[in-house]
Image 1 (cartoon, rainbow, N blue to C red):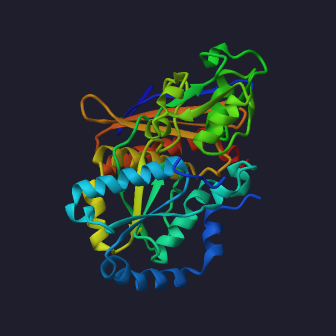
Image 2 (image 1 turned 120 degrees about the vertical axis):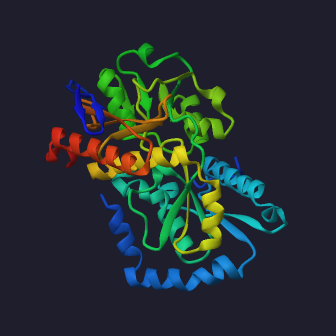
Length: 367
């Protein structure tokens, strides 16, 4: 443990051996995905031209979302909060939820890392936003890249749900009970790395699809157990499906897990006013810290990264982050604590990410 200008830092490094109705069931970087969509200047021109008509000329506020049950639950939550905060949005036709298919929802037979990463869950929604087909886009923050498409902003985070992961199995009550060779289904490299770091005798297989699909696959015997986000289960009313909740020491969550982010067009003042009213400051600061950590690491979509910032009992901001290799053989982690301000939140995240990048080495992130 050592003292820094931002507080006390603990560092550990170790090396060990490895429905709403229906949902629409390589290495390409996120920036490449955007460059393939259209030239930057064309995006700027389009964003500017639709602002007036989209945010002033239309009476219906259009809420864009993916079509999965969880995404829809988050969009409906956003809709209901907007109606509660702004009575005029309770009028018939004032709000409309628009379902948008994303590449990440369509391609389910490959790991996300092989088809371009988590930006595949947001790209089409960002396109619709810039083209004026929707006015706001509702995202799971853990799916949002550390950069935002030019012409968009993300001014709102709703109150965060419980960020922890859960263990689900029909045969076993905990991870510790899983026998050697037991199969755990997960599409998350973060979960896989932390799982194998502690339980190298287990086997992990790719396990994609929405929450209901994964629960069905588990019931059909595709694997012995799976890990899911508690936040998603709660928002779907499926919390009872969890066999046990994993402690933060056992499974650190993904950056921004449990947080909902709402994006809109830059300069769209009527919509910005709506979103600023809904934003939850403690969640926003935590997300800012965690995303600064992720950006500082600059890891590829193949790098297992986890991080969580939380308010302490005395009102300060505490952060813990880690990086690992995909087999869990190497894991580096660190902690920070400091004042709960945006400047300090960003500084803590950046400093923690820079430290782990130095300790792991540049080649560690080139999978």
